[in-house]
Length: 115
Length: 115
Image (cartoon, each protein chain N blue to C red):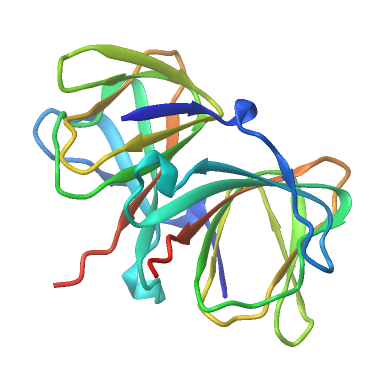
């Protein structure tokens, strides 16, 4: 077993095109011996957003703090806030935007892809 | 995509032997179309605990609120609090206990087992 202090894990800027004021901390990943999935903490500053993109794998998200909106493949906005869980299924276009005054904080779990 | 209000998901008592004052809400699971893993919210009241047990699958946990201790296979106690992530590897004996005055709240992710 392993206990990790999330605030001591390095926050890396998300540099993918379209991302703005967004960082990721890889809390639990393959290098920790996780066999199937990885847990990340995503932080989006006020006015910030994750890239709008899609991929073959799913996201399972829990909103820790803040207010935001989820943009779907039709450009529609779905508001969310603390205490919401979000499932993004494989190949669904999605973007998370911070719509509030504080940093938006999300736990985001993804499968570990085995080559 | 699907947005779920965690407080509207039914809280079920954890009835496994050794559990005490502990409930689980299945936020995202196979019935939502999750292909690989399930996200649950576990709530342990003051003085409560999850069962001490082990299983072939891992847990990836994020501590949302409260203070607790994790008991390992040697009976040793590891304290944790809000903002910690915990990896329990397959076949590791473990138990979560609430050591604080408020409800301990954990996000706990497990693989979906395919028969």
